[in-house]
Image 1 (cartoon, rainbow, N blue to C red):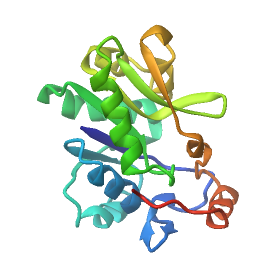
Image 2: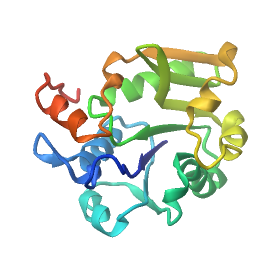
Image 3: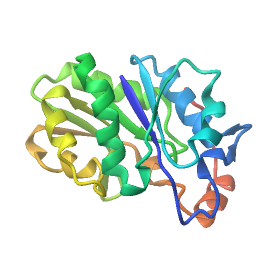
Image 4: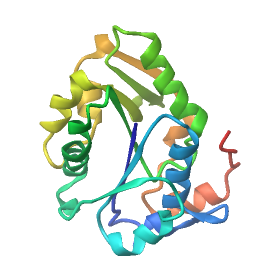
Length: 196
């Protein structure tokens, strides 16, 4: 299953979830990508301006989690998601964010496939540049660590905690992360990718 965190960006100056990308909002694009990956149930965590963002995904077969304390940070969104989905006994959860516009259904499916093929691995994460992060999939054995994250911390802290049981899948276009108006303009003028 997939959890999509639609976090806020104070540096964008506007709701980045609603920014248009190839005829759809950034939020709809990300949620649609998760659905197209066909890797199980999709849950979307909505925080800031949830009432504006919810209509963007009503046409998609997704579940929503309204996180009222979104301003506490990404870790709080991860924990809000876990509180909803962990009791459903999922074997693994894939976390992604809405501001990496080059994520494709194939990349998400590849992360899940890699986890299924390597039982000794408990996390499969995306590697870009000198970093590692989301999208990333976590076995249930790592849910407790995610639940103990500080409110401001992201999933990267858990990804890096046990390198011996973490597999990295190259995703260089993951470096494109839309946090500022300049990021968005660079993306608009860059070669696009099809969501295959």
